[in-house]
Amino acid sequence: MIRLSARLRTAAAAVMLTAAATGTAVAVAGPANADNESCTTRTVVTVNSKAANQRLVYGTYANVTAKVTASCPTGDPDFADAGTLVLQKSLNGGSTWRTVQTRSSANGQIPDYASVYGKYAISRNTVFRAVYSGSTNRSASAWSDTFTASSDSISVHVYRHVGDRHTCARKGCTYTFTIKPAASIRGLTVKFQRVVGGKWRTRSHVRVSSNGTFRHLFTLGKTRILIPGGRGYLGSTGSVRVYRY
Image (cartoon, rainbow, N blue to C red; front, side, top):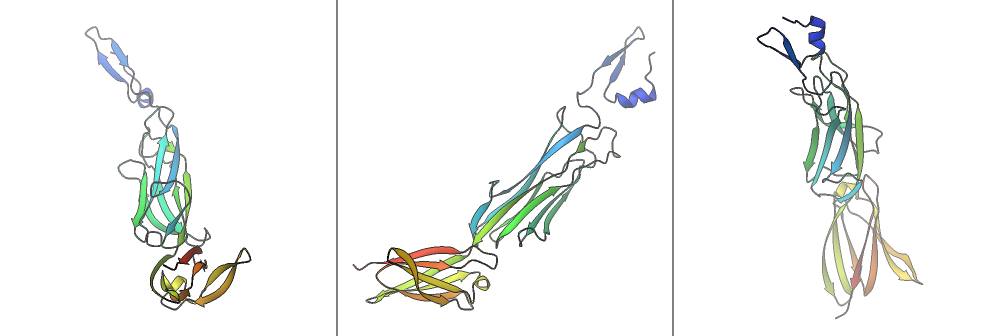
């Protein structure tokens, strides 16, 4: 009978021996995957399935997702401790970060998915990043692969939501605007411009109230509205044109 030594048995874990009637042994090759491979990972952050910086309006449903994929030289990865995936967000351009969700290795599988979603999942200018720690711990299995660390980030800029209602009379149309969130705009100045001499020029302005509202009488013609940015939001521009019927 042919016997493998203990050292060789460990190094050829997937080899199977079958004894023939003559007492000889036949070795059958196991899977091609080698032990302790170095696998490369890729982490991608998306917002509403798009992996690019975006602009949204306050109150828009958003789904922020982080995914990790692994690529190994001989195919499918062998897992032991497969590291941790952390999804974070920053409201100050990346100066400080807050963890939104943490996914750890479970059942020997790479933590390949983390997400946050909802109507107010992104309520102001936000940078999201996902950091996958990678893994070099092989203690759970002599056949465990190692995984490189990887990360990704995405920026989302947010416009305030602007609602309006109006009434019209002989002098023009009076609009009442309501901006959300109110705290982001209260006390700031909205400008109204008309074309004078071929250029837009500010003709009047109004300060936004504590509940995020302001009012303006629009006369015949086109008026441009400038809503300031700041306090975590983009500025926005709109216009109202009044006709006589």
